[in-house]
Length: 577
Ligand SMILES: Cc1cc2nc3c(=O)[nH]c(=O)nc-3n(C[C@H](O)[C@H](O)[C@H](O)COP(=O)(O)OP(=O)(O)OC[C@H]3O[C@@H](n4cnc5c(N)ncnc54)[C@H](O)[C@@H]3O)c2cc1C
Image 1 (cartoon, protein in one colour):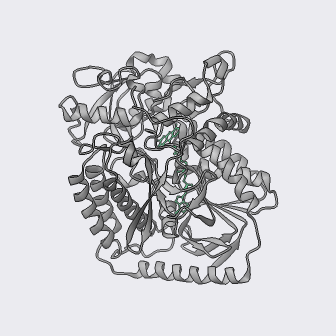
Image 2 (tube, rainbow, N blue to C red):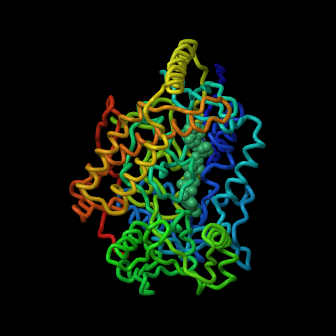
Image 3 (cartoon, protein in one colour):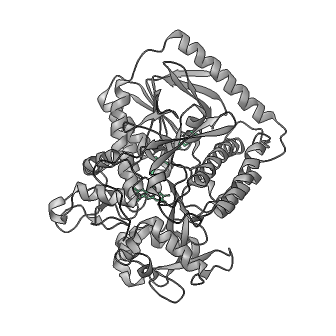
């Protein structure tokens, strides 16, 4: 087994991971930095971000302010975000947009050359900068170019991490090189987990196939706590039947939501914001329309939907600002949005919860103590800016702002690894190698694929937009059985070269743990807040539940704890749009 020593190890090459690498490299040119990605870096999920990145660029021209951005974000979060973290986000987001400008992102501009900002759900003022509807792709391309030019950064593409190895003063990652099947350990002084969310635990999702929450599960197994994982965002407008995202920018540019009676039904649910209400509210509105018989049904998939109508925007706006949406509709379902309305329904899109971190991105255990040498950044980390419901375009700013914060932190945390720590890492690596060999050779009863299908059905049926105790208990019961079965798996493909069967099995083991954690946290929270909407507890209950859910592993079970929501300026109030 190869052992490679670096100072800073970054697990993940999306916008969170890449920005961390650039800032830590710039601040400490002597630090050796490794970026590890299970995909080619440019296939990281971030490339598919569409609509834009939030930040108050022109406060005077737009009559906007950081304070207003903060208020919108906190109200959007249903008052579960930590307000100190939100203040940090809104203060630094504009600087990050300019940083990307300098890296070469071709932001859309107006006639005077000013970066255009588009309206987004729950934002009072247009403050989302964009590069057509391919923002993530352009940001990633610029980051990738930059990272490649840094002499102290190495990228390990298509290297799959299976375990975090921790000793008192060192940290490492156990890796399978997917191209050869060979094992290696990359170790050093600091590990940053930047592995994205876990929306793939649902059957229908807008996210890429790789969004399986591996790093969150790895951290959970390494003693980290998880925060607020019951809050999964369902994006209101996923294309039917395939779940591909139709960006919120389509409504930002003026798209309408229509039911089967051709009615703009949002007037019943958010009369002032209409189609630009926050996502949790629109998703509930769509499902209510469907449940009350005002939806339509796709005959082939059986999925019910409403329409997103862009026809009145005209060809010029669609072609200039939403070209990818047009292409997606034509190529995947043969529908031209210039001529026909688009069938859409809510689908799992973003995970507000994740690895519990403090405001510096440092990973915390269940007692809220720092875990040495461990940070989390991007969607996998819960620094609590999104609370119970994220506002669209705030994720790319979160990834960028905390990429800088964590980059600075880890640039200072470089130290020699002592002989004893290295020996202990080697021992832990041998144990992990043994676990993998046993899994590889085992003639288990189940394949990951069959269990994964069941897990996704359960999540979709029992933990979707509306939840209740009876259904969640049934779902949790099935997930517990699946969790047990996940110790009895077989891998049919015995080759070493690009063994996707092995990779998928390891991803499933991670996902079932996270699905189980979501179920436990969702059943535990007896109120409705943001994306967690219970028909049996339909109201928000600040008296009991204005707190974060903290989970940690306890043998084969789960321990639950809570932490306070940080309120700085904005007292919780009724959320009306
Ligand atoms: C379709 C879509 C459009 C979106 N559009 C927007 C938008 O316009 N604006 C906005 O703010 N947000 C948007 N979001 C959300 C946003 O894209 C994500 O939250 C963000 O890109 C996540 O970035 P990240 O760096 O945290 O992780 P990711 O980009 O998901 O990257 C994860 C990285 O971790 C690596 N990794 C994972 N597991 C392992 C493992 N086991 N071993 C090794 N490497 C591993 C992967 O290879 C990858 O490099 C969108 C989401 C979707 C689904």
